[in-house]
Length: 293
Length: 246
Image (tube, rainbow over all chains, first blue to last red; front, side):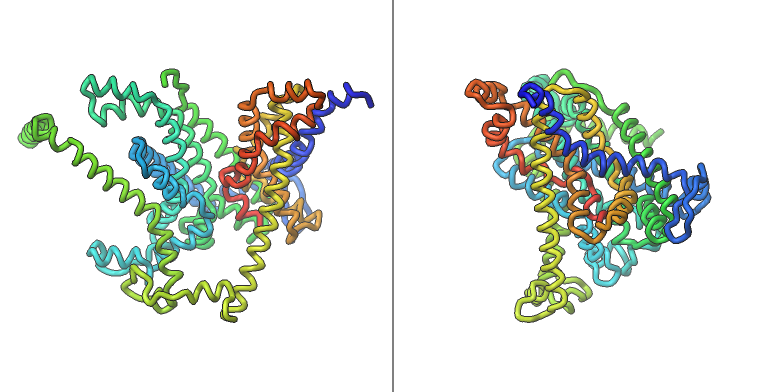
């Protein structure tokens, strides 16, 4: 083999491990999911055969799964709104440089650094109906007359409280994304506005907001993908109970509890499509390139 | 109507006050500083309270944690739970042996995945950043596009692939899945990092007779070393994948 041939082959040698990994462990499984969504796959009740849209029809006929789509929409709505609003507010509060900003940022990022499973366990103790601090604290300030069972009784309250756990986890990511954008804004813009007599609110609406819009779009998409795929928090705080269950939980139940792999594939495919479609819609709506910055 | 008139007048009065000398004093430095401190206190409380609560509970006795109303400080303060979890003094042997075993598993899995990810990503990112080859853009975009896949879309097939290879309940299955999840972000970070390194460094190496591989190993990697441990330690690449693939 001569040197020039070896040199020409070098890039392919360098990327081949990557291509093998991503191909075998991301593309092949995704293709597999897509194809087998149209098959009846039940490991305990063979044979596997093509059934067209049969899995999808079965899924939409199932009231628990229909409800889970609605629940998931609510998870997403709460998660996106709260994490983006809190994220923006916290980022703005940290915009001004100070000696403690590094330390404060490190503390704020902590919830994002913990595994979702650990966080759900922590919050399950906070929400505990008998020994939880939530009941105790609300009762001691007379906000509630008696102790409540917070999770598993009321559908929307259950969803809200579970999603708050996720908001607690993912807001730091929004803070980091939005703060990075805020810091790239030229201080001169604020100086000019101050000279013109603008207050803090006007400066936020007229200068900060338009310039951090792309960052808000990215934070929105991140929150959307994460809340659309919520699983750990629901599973730990509410088990596999239908009340408040998310679509990811139903994918898990369909696949590993009902052992209906075909149904699980079909649900996975639908969630993937929903994630892609909603992400692109959010980007198209919110993302705008910013020239002045 | 009367209400609207009143509220309008109130609003005007408020505007006058806030814009007047008194208002200026209110929105002046001390008031704003107080507001900022209060806001930061709320933010820190929100971030830290659940973590503090876990610490508080873990340092209490079982009956202390199970009391109504709750104790905001561990009472009585005890390290019993930690002694049991870590198996100090022979307490709670069952829990501790499981814990050490799990710690060992996690260390093996994440350690191997990190090394493998960094090695694969450095060579591939270098090729993307510096070398010319066919389908470069297509491959690069396809790899990054897998970041958008929900982890669960590939979960069932991955499980079946691993099961068919007899790899369920083995380190290697988890490691391989971790690596495939970590790679796209690692590639992205290292690709950008390589682009910040001036090509003159490698050109100088080439003048001294080093081929591209030698230049990469001896010049670029030492310069890029600070960025290389970053990708695997970041968790944002594939949320949930790790906890679900077990």
